[in-house]
Image (spheres, one colour):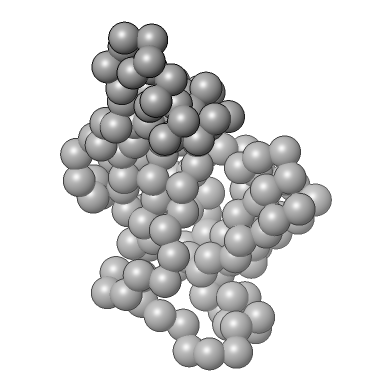
Length: 147
């Protein structure tokens, strides 16, 4: 299992933001200081109040609007879903980082959440994910299809 902990300024606003993107929360691990956001079968993002986060962190907390400590990327099932989730993030108060990135086998968009944490939503062709990008590109070129 993977748990990623991130500090948020307003837990209820952050929960509402991510709910608008389609994420759910495990109520067994959610209270007034933390929300356990489900991002995969065995992967979770713990949205923690800054005070709760400080209880776990041994170093000073960085400001995500001025310093990047991590970028959070999650996959969706189609290019259209990338655009839909990104549009939902912007409509919920997120900020677009840059335009769509289209590599043929992979398509993504990036945004900042309400606290300034950088997120990327991406789709990858299942064959490319299984073979790896270079092998996938070679197989599509061998088949006469541009990569």
